[in-house]
Length: 447
Image (cartoon, rainbow, N blue to C red; front, side):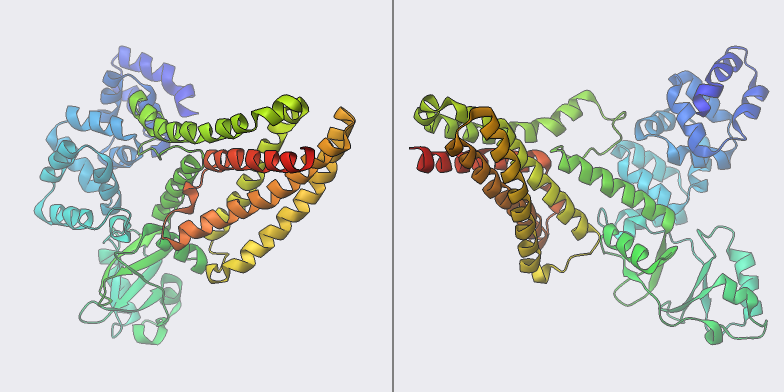
């Protein structure tokens, strides 16, 4: 919206070198909107505009930019300017930036940081990819249980300015171990001389620093948290994960799952920032494998060539049968994969899930049996062919539901992402197995 409204004025102000007007135009807008505008400009115009931003706003905008735009800015801005921007970026956002930029650019940026921030950045980057350690921020407020409410509030005023959040304060012992938490509301409403130990909550939820980010997201959703403390194996408090970071995790996981479901290797960057060659590489692998698997369908049709030549009407119903199988398995797999992701299924009782889907498949098959039996009889006026088509779709529905249910469960049991069972994969499996079922039934009934 912003870029459509302001782009002509921005370009005119740049041509006229009206820097004051430029500052007034953009400084009042939110960082994400300014980032969208910058990405739509030519490189030279982008640099001019970015240099005009106040340091704090420039840092917020830099975090929102596509990685290729960030790289361009790093290479064209002075080291002093980049240092100022980096020091304004929260540690968790810095880590995310460092994860995705090219190695030489990351080395340049880390070298600009003061020793303390450099150590902090390297420590966070030292955790495994996709672990909670890469997501957490060390900017939080901690208090001691023997402190008074009055002293704790003074502590917050002094050290809370740079904290990611002060809505929750974490209570630690003398060794830094997490022992409880206090909500700011409760602290503010307490008597000044009350001890933290009197108002703190000793029942808390925490996560290990090496756990997967997706687990942190599930915990925050389950317990309705705005921040999640991160601890090591000794329960030493290392940092916190906040809800804004978890929203990013949800978006990334959802995008990755959608790519996998479509048979595409997940993109590292956004679509617009991904080069054409990379898009080709991400898609050609699965397409090649599925094309090879598709040869099986051709082989099955070829092996029943004599039957088809005698009863050509059988070929009329191939598309509807294999489409029904693919659609049924995709429906089943989508429901199961989503239920697994939301933690709705107890996989120890996998047989109950399979039995339920087999029953659903049977009911679907019976409904479609009546539909296709009637349709094929109206079309061909042959009761035997109609029965073959109807019986085939019934069996295919049960089989497709079984495949769409059992494969995600097996992958989950093997600690693999069930989303890898993509619609193209299921469709390909149901193509050749559906054809085999169809021709086998036709052979025994019509021979």
